[in-house]
Image (cartoon, rainbow, N blue to C red; front, side, top):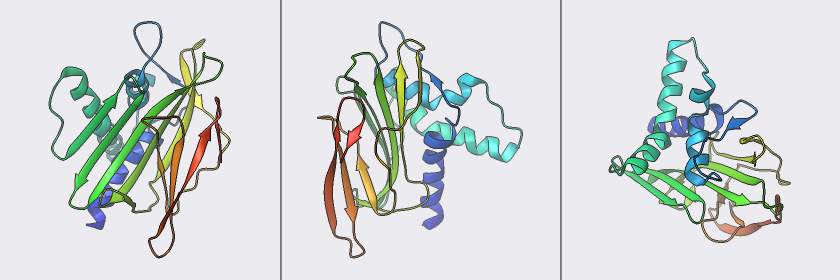
Length: 209
């Protein structure tokens, strides 16, 4: 089971936090402004768009596999095809929110993506998080947990990694990106499995505790 868990996490972690190692990601879209599908698609295909190549065959295989999880879910959504087995894929374009979940037994790998309109009404903040949950709610902490933020600049049509005023922690801490509202809910578990919650408040450009 542990091998299965880390295999799943390797796929989504590589997708979200290794595939986009370059400083800036071009956001490709039609119309006047990108929406959550445009941000997510640009994010998961960033290496492909940049023409990156990996010489080592085994590493290339791992990277290609890592791109398939959310990318395939997005492709299925865009073409109206059914999602894969054990996959739940939620898209709320109006709210600017996506949730991907792959569940096996009591374990589920969850990736959330969303964006905020910044107070200058020009820039946007995009976030992606990945974590493993037990019974759909309790964090199974590990080295592959992740939360990243990118700021989108409409002048360049690119988004770049950005400091949003908080220090992201990973040990026994889960971050729930907002589908409604603008704040991030933080759940912290103690050694006895008891949970307490706090909120990271959106201030128009970043977050405060």
